[in-house]
Every structure is written in structure tokens, then in C-alpha cells.
Length: 235
Image (cartoon, rainbow, N blue to C red; front, side, top):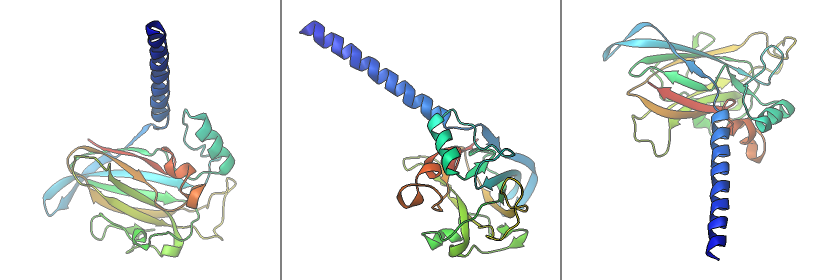
């Protein structure tokens, strides 16, 4: 009996190690290459001159020959994305930002949209006052019925690090917008905003517009790193 228990214990331990290794590999596979904000001079703030870093991202409604979409080592996610036409942020959802800096983000938006569940998210939150523009024009938000996606950056629930919360809505493309051969609007909607980072920390971000699959459209790309969610590392 003792020998049997030892054998069974060894088997279960092996299964646990294999399962843990597989889960870790799956998590790592879902993390795309890092997109780094580039420091481009300085900017004046009430606290003096701070480094100014710039970051550009795009949002596409589905992959195409021109924009193949996230290259994840995850067969299930890749197959689901191809068959269901998942939207995604490009070129990566893994972002690195400099600490104690101003970060100016420009998002080139090519997707359609609809009504967001929480109207509060249709207005920018946590940004430098007056820094939100749509196609170069200062705005105070987006109509809740015309949201395509959001870029919502926040802390891990258990994070013991500097507070950082930023949420910015991007408007939807018109249903009548002219499109190219790949099905993308020929002209993006450009949303630009600026926020300030503090000390180093690790955060997560996601889209809060229901643009996925399954229950109330919050499955699929909404929970998949590389598509509508990712990480932000402040270094």
C-alpha cells in the first residue's frame, strides 16, 4: 500500500508539473512583443520639465493580408480570431513606458462600433487636462452611442505600486466610410491624448467596449492578450 501511494503521488506530481508548465507556456505565448514609447524631447509641466514619450497604435476590425494581426503561439486563439474576425490593437498590446514622464499616445482607429454599456467610459479619464483630440480637434468625449473601443489602463487588484488609471474612448467609423481592398476605411480616425506616469510599476489595460464574442460580447478578443487586452510596464 505504501509503495502504491508513493507511485500515485509521483504520478499526480508529474501531472501537476506538466499542467503547470503548459499553463505557464500558454500565458507566455499570449504575450506579444513589446511596443516601447519613444522619448522625444521634454515638456513643461507644473512640476517642471519632464521627458515626453510618444506612442502610436492602431485598431483594426479584423486581420488581412496587409495587416495579419497578432502572431501568437496559441493555435486556439489564432483559429478563433480568423474564423470570427476578431478586432485588435496593432502592432502590439504589450507596452513599455518610461517612468516619471509625460506619454503622448496616438491611436489610429479603423473599426466600427456602437453603444457602450457605461456612458462614463465615453469620456476620457486620467489624462492631462485639455490633451484629448479627435482628428486634431479638442474634444471632451465621444457620444455613448458612437464608441468603437476604449484604451483603459489600470492597476492589478492586488498591486502595491503607484496609482495609475487612464481610460480613453475612440469613436466609431461611419458605416458609409469608403474602404480599401482589405475592408479597412481609407482614412483612420486619429485620437491623441497625454497622461503622466509615476514610479516604475506593472499594469494591465483592456478595451471596455463590448466588441467580443459569447456572453454580452465580452469574450474572445476582449480577454485575449494581443487583441483587446494587454500589459503596460512602466520602467
